[in-house]
Length: 255
Image 1 (tube, rainbow, N blue to C red):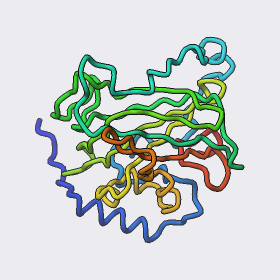
Image 2: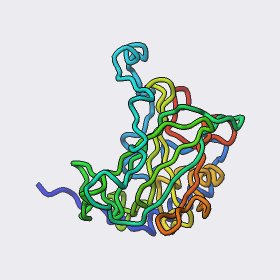
Image 3: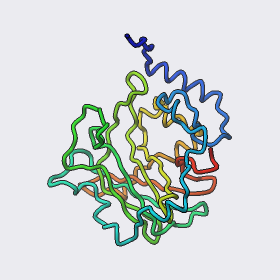
């Protein structure tokens, strides 16, 4: 039996849908829009009910714990995992984790993961036919200091294709994970790079219909953060609460 042919969707088709939703968007709704049809693969799996049925107290009892002694400062340097230098543009990414009043959030575990400079993740389901870099794992972590500051040395990730539609490419980005006092308080978000030409074409980025909230996910080039002769610097603050809160995946009660 031959599967029915699906219509071939182009970037122009998706861009028309994105523009239509943008025009009709109610910017007072929670961001991003969970039901966002241009993000094709999310249609059947975006949450319509609370997906967390686990007992939080049970998780607290059995989940692994972490602490300052578990995180070595070298884990924040993603360029030293192999026997040689990873390939790509070296960058320094730093910023502060703040609460809604602008106060530093100290001693917080910050983790990142990302694609390599060719846009390839180290993952068994990764199918992008770009080369793996044996000297780059794409994962790192650190603890915020007394000023709430984190800092990573890494390689600028490349954009990569994904199967949403024909010629679909994700803007270059770094995933961030922040823990509170327990794993059940984990927040996840993404940091993008300024002036990426793929912003207007990406249905994941565009599922946030508030331009202010989109802008909050884009780092700023900081020349003072650049290391002479070595790496370019990007500054990106993460605000956990309040009207300037950085977008993260929805928490319980937001759905």
